Length: 237
Image (cartoon, rainbow, N blue to C red; front, side, top):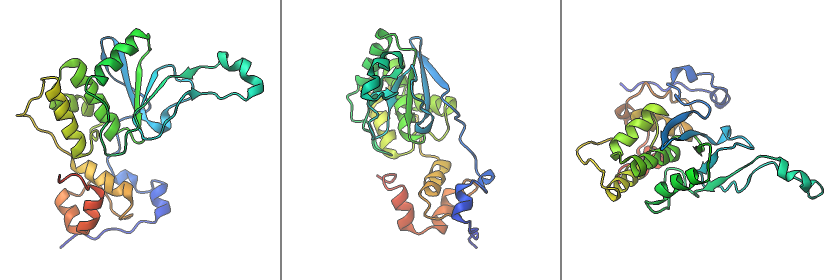
């Protein structure tokens, strides 16, 4: 007999009244994930990016931030040189998708950041899982000669175990590793059950769905096939 799904009020969901039933993310703030050639690489979610951050911002969302800092009215422009303004690289990267850049982008990004004496690179997207995780793994593959498997394992260990969350992102990293001649076809990695549960919960198709204690087979039993496919629509490709 299928388990009964407990109904939860949407307001209670928003206030995290039942969130203790879930495994929460392991990433907090904008912690350092690793270093490349002495350059610290940090990661966070969009909400944690602050005005005047002195690190190079790698914006992995699909919304441009342009010059990120304090904006002065025309009559106070004389104060502009006294304000810290962040340098931001906008990726125009859609959620669940892959970056539209050539392989050497990840190498040249580090080269230019070091040349420009940046204090570090802060990688971010909306939730700091899929796009952020993919960018972090891409930096390791291109600059540290890591296989896609090893890069993903390191990112999931050092940042969040739910990083890299679609099959298209996995394929992108494997193809990138082939471009740099460091792919290991024997080792494989995949989307985790907790990632599937998180996406379903985030989509709020089933507000009472209580998450990570269910296996993928139980999800398939309890949710209409169309709902599951609409949430993870590229995972079977």
